[in-house]
Amino acid sequence: MTVRMWIDVLTVITATVFYSVAWPTLHVTHVVPPPVQPFIAALAAFPILLIRVNPALGWAISAGSALVIALAIPHQPGSDLPFQVVHILSLIALLFAVGLRASMQIVAVAWVATSLLFATTIAGDGVSAAWGWPIGLAAVVLFALLVRWLVSSRVQLLRQEEENELERARRAILEEKARIARDLHDVVAHHMSLVVVQAQTAPYRVDGVTPAARAEFDSIGATAREALNEIRGMLGVLRSDGQLPEHAPQPKAADIFGLFEGARRAGVAIEWTVDGDLAAIPETTGLALYRIAQESLSNASRHAPGAPVRVHITCGIELHLRVVNGPGATPARPVGNGGHGIAGMRARALAAGGEVTADPSPDGGFEVRARLPRTPGTLDPLLAAGDDGLPAAPR
Image (cartoon, rainbow, N blue to C red; front, side, top):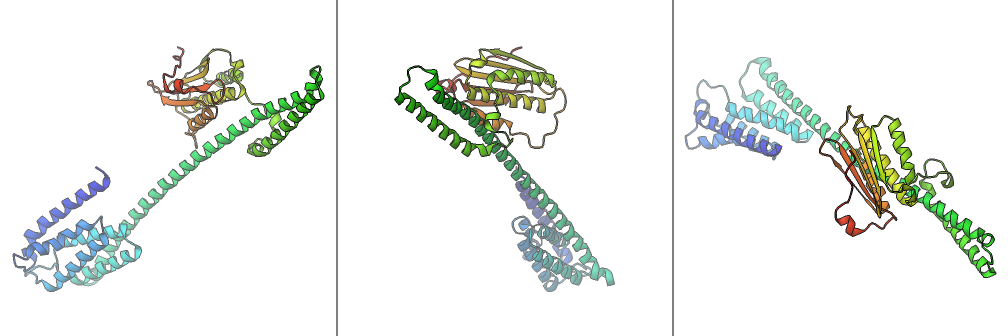
């Protein structure tokens, strides 16, 4: 059951208890014919049923009926209460609910009206009669407003945290996309530069080049330079490190061994096995493999400090990467904006035509699996839909 359902059930139970007390005891305080007693008791007890749906309406019904009962129904001899104690409790509860839910104008009107009703109809002596009830009811209203402010602040805080989390996730994805665009820019710029160089030097490297072929080579070189300039103009703005593309070489698949050695020097208990030749992997796919492994190791060291990490890479028709870490040996370091590295790895794999899965492992650790095509964008859908073919983690 939800909180609202529990509140509704408690409200119904309270109204039932109030009514079961008000009806049998009404003859003790007021002179009421027996056939009328159930209706008078209902006016005392049942307005509280509106405490969650419309507390202002419930308070108005309860206060109005209390005034009518105090003025129109005679009291029993010796009874000083203008209406029943149940009616007083119901009014106070409804006033508290008005303080929680209604506008400040209605809260002020309800407090003033209830204070006047109690102060003028309930017998008392001197100053206590004039100020006792207004002060007591003011305390009820102030407490309700305090609870209202605390709940409102908590709701606003949760909403702000959700918005901040969404903004962090969106920013992390945008940053990873920008990083992918920069990497692709570097790779494309490198190859286009080679095309320009080859086109310009071909007449000097190849014997027997005819004037027509020389003109064709010149045209290829000019087209490649134009394309290279356009690529730099469109994507160079994404670069934030202040380096020119030709001065910012990107890591290749073979550089992943240096990544593993660096992680070991940093204190990560890492073991790795590689099946195949990483040097033969194309640059774009190798860059994606490197970045996914880098992010996996970073997450393992950040969220499971001291845990052993096992990495297995298989180079075949497709590339398979598996990174497994056990539970952390020491408490994880707090991270202010973590939690989005997996989204970045998936975006990185998707850009290369592959896929990434990341799930907790049975021993309390974490496991990242990546499948990448050897040539970007050529992942076989039949293989992707079937068994993932990843080897078991090395022991």
